[in-house]
Length: 361
Ligand code: PEP
Ligand code: MN
Image (cartoon, rainbow, N blue to C red):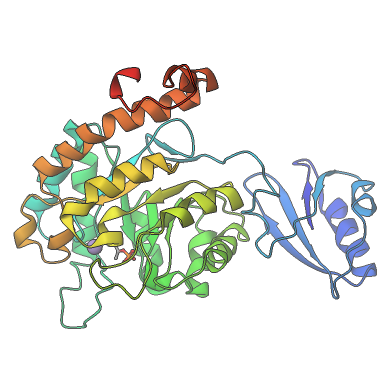
């Protein structure tokens, strides 16, 4: 059960709720939200006191019973989709922000050229790894602090927000001092110490699904961040390990749609890591829009064949422009579904069957 205090609640009001919960043998987890205190009431056995025990107390705003193990990120806790703003981008609403850039920041020329190109297409957020989680210790590990500096300058020159991965708690304050959004990658999805520390920065967090994480494990990882009082979380489906080796991972688009059923957090799709193949990035991006994703993360490089990491899945600048062109009718349909339910009727024939033509958009 989650008790949300009113913003004007004082220490004594909060203490009273904690005291009452303790009388019922419950444990209390306290977190400080952006403007209010949240108290997670956890039953010792499986019996929780009824909601009105807390609703009656002064300065209690709301008491919500949540049946899932993840609480703050669940739809039960918050029915409305939440929006996460990063610079000029808003995830979780009508817009469809795309985060794009190279797998790794490699040189000044590479990151500046990419940033200028993305700006020319109206892309709001630049990605690029400075600390790289490579499978082999002998592969390019990223430029580290120098990469962060280059990327910050390139992002600033083009007026873009900067999204970059933080690999360890050790680098957190450094990475946080440069980035606008912290990425926690697949391999670190269950690094709970890092999740807690990143949550405590209150910065927007892009949390990628672990290679073999279930949907529940993914949402519990997000809960670690939310429990620090940081609800600025964007979830990213980036493919999971399955038996088939023909794609690098298996893109779980049903999982992405399910995440939006279970959670109010925005969900984006990374078709680059999810497939590992350049040729699949555009089709999977189209599909991501169709299943209701809130945005994309796409790898793009001025010379993919020379990339120091993930060249095979990186789009060239021209291919990225093609992605944007090909997504246009899909995004127009998405927009129409926001505008009004009636719009979708226009896209149907007299018997209510969909007309599979773009002209109805
Ligand atoms: C990345 O986005 O560069 C990355 C390493 O992704 P993932 O953690 O999904 O493998
Ligand atoms: Mn990559």
